[in-house]
Length: 190
Ligand code: URA
Image (cartoon, rainbow, N blue to C red):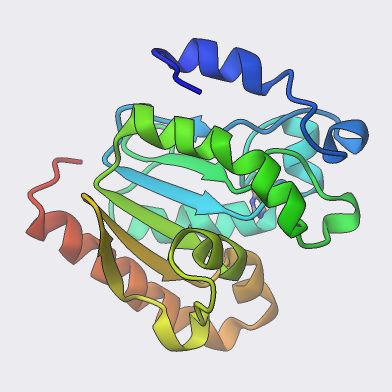
């Protein structure tokens, strides 16, 4: 699929019925932020609050994400874009199945082609395994930058996982600080 504009892309995505999640969703959660951002954050899939409000990361995990972003002067309303691997909520917040991820990933690819980010931050295992490598281990590889094509990828802890395991918060903070350094190194204006 080739889209020239975000408006067209979003219009089609909101009508998507490519997988069974379309039958249980309240609404498609397309993404939020600056469509010209150099930094793209990718989570796993909408939860209950996101499904109801139509925006990624608006629940407790999202509030924690916003705090980490603020520490390094990033802001979803200003200089980043946030999307998910799957755009519709998996029932009871289960992991999105491989078939659902495969049905949905083209929407993210189209978003990525239009945004043209220099850095993609994968929030959690599902996102990192889909976008970086199949066997990505967050506990071992978090904070590492891997260049694929013209884009630097980095995987870090999912904020919901940090709420369950607060012991990983210092490591997550250092990943965000490493991101800040990478932004400087690449002369990205934020
Ligand atoms: N978790 C995710 O991975 N994405 C969201 O949008 C919300 C919670």
